[in-house]
Length: 305
View (cartoon, rainbow, N blue to C red):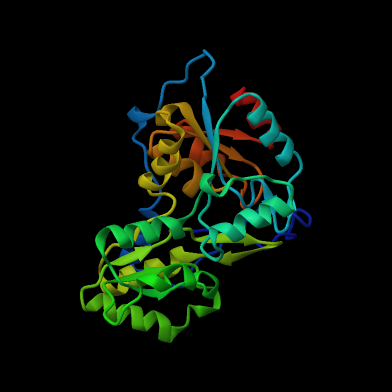
């Protein structure tokens, strides 16, 4: 099993090459299963046939952090890529697993970097979670980041009907997780706004929702409902807003598992860019399933057009 290395180790400041480590004791089989089963798998005979003809793509979904920007700075060519696609009449939607920030705050942050994204074109797990709770008339018990708690204020009540898990950051304390565990033992469902293992934060990696979701699943012996990537419903909500069939839409991301394999499993096309949280060897996860790999966004635009 591999862990994300600290950038700067072995191959220069921005290297993302990982080191192989050996655990002193094997992880419980159920916990390993919980961590691995979120990755879409493809039997060999299900790999799409590669045609020599150009594939027609009529719409695009873009991940944000690691694809269009890192930190507070746009990646080279990101603004030009969006302008080129808009000029060519390619409709776009933007899809993120960020659960630390509201949708309006994300749009404002993008605007400060010169990346214009209409708020209705941005799909987040926070919005998906609200819609899920409202449709099922569920009152949530929240373990989420303080900055998004207000998004669920009108849905709170004295008797919770579900445990909602987001990227709580430092809020992932033993007490908070144990309180969720007790509610799960009482029969409440676990809703997770994503299942990412980690994310890139500046020049380092940080734990995301996935490890904490897997711990609660393992302890309570249940399976979470994932409302963000790689849930097919999350991808298809963005695709449906384009009015296009999934096979005509490409997902562009830096996460081989959540972005590209998730999109491929939902019937979309997938493009992995070597930026953000990309790590050497990620090609082996996406290419056998029909995904494409690109060095930068310019190459993705050329492929689409």
